[in-house]
Length: 257
Image 1 (spheres, one colour):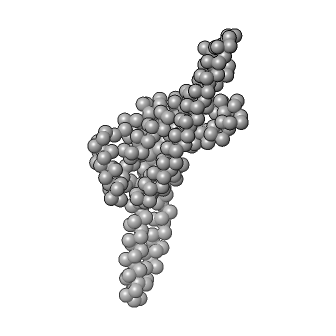
Image 2 (tube, rainbow, N blue to C red):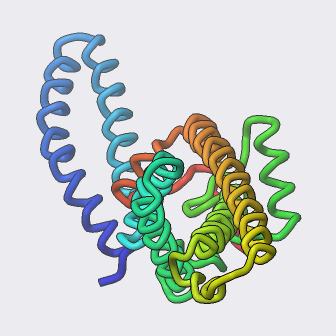
Image 3 (cartoon, rainbow, N blue to C red):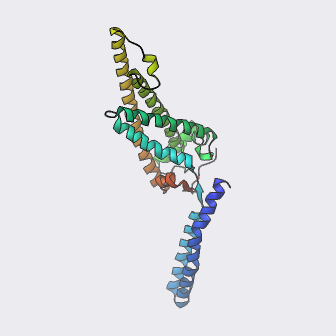
């Protein structure tokens, strides 16, 4: 069974309870309509409410699979812990970094062979589509996308690259201290000049690591703001969607690529 079919089945199951109440509401409203004109108005309002609720539930679609959701929340936790342990707990910080590298590897592979909305080809758009989305964002009417929107898609790519380079510089700095997979290239008994050069190199890698971590943290906050803005403009809970995997089909769906 495909994810779309599974999503539709879950949507039908969810609306079953709503439809079970439809008959009760209609009976009550019809009795009121028979009694007076106010009942007619009640019946009209009930029908509108039922139509809106059932149509929304029927249009729920499974967008984010378990791999994407697990990666997203695991990366958020690992990055937060990495940032908090950077100055005091080197060993824990290093192992958290290894975990992030594993997560990145899984996400890259899944971005090639994964489900529709997980693939990079689904959310990496050209300049024209990005400009169109930004223009719509400025006037408060951007096109809605089931997956990542054009700006959000490039933000994902940028964050993945920044986190990757942050991990790389961290491994270089850790290696100069004689630890980690890069430690072999710094092994041996260096002389005084080599020790001084090694110290300068370690300081350089450490500073690059910290700068990249700060830039990444800044982009994480930008990402959070973007999620809030998109949730308000499109009237959908993107945080809940990333937790459950389900989104409602947008009313102003973007044109297909």
